[in-house]
Image (cartoon, rainbow, N blue to C red):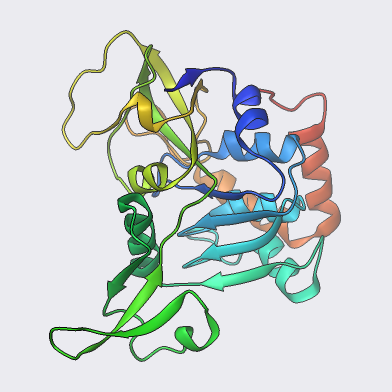
Length: 273
């Protein structure tokens, strides 16, 4: 059952060196505050899993938290490259980064298989690509009914899933709404789950398009208003487009990025949640 704790305690208890960690959220509800707390607690050797690494994983990679990235598309939305990610792959700074690349459909199906307790998922994707030749978690499989060659992708079962949501009640039940990605599947596929929320309410009110995660599926809930910034939480906050634009020159330069870490994550003026 979910415990309602501080974000610092949730990360300390749930995220360990060497863990496979999935931080999901689609366009909005990206758990930036939780990612920053992982950096602040100096976790190392993480396998980071996310359909679109986004700026949150650029920051984690640049801070030296990651040894491997499992993903389907990497970029700063609307701006360009993830320069800390690129520097780690091309030059091994601040440490070498192993990569495992998939398609969006492949990643989504991997989460679904993990959440369903299955060892793999089957899809028609990857046909005509070279990914299966370089990725051990993609294998051809023959349909026993039609003889068609399909692709099997290994299930994802992260050690920890971390998501942001709009609300939780005082029992630890979580509700999120708006654009939904694979947050539900990531939580159900993982051994432990942290959910940061905009607010804790006495009772969850049904909403159109809402996803409700029961308290038994969640390990820790932490109240972190604006915890998705610079992404947004539908109905609560707006996307900070200037942040994404400003990140590009920061990430391009190692010294400038290191200064950002000291000022915004480790320094006395950093926001500690």
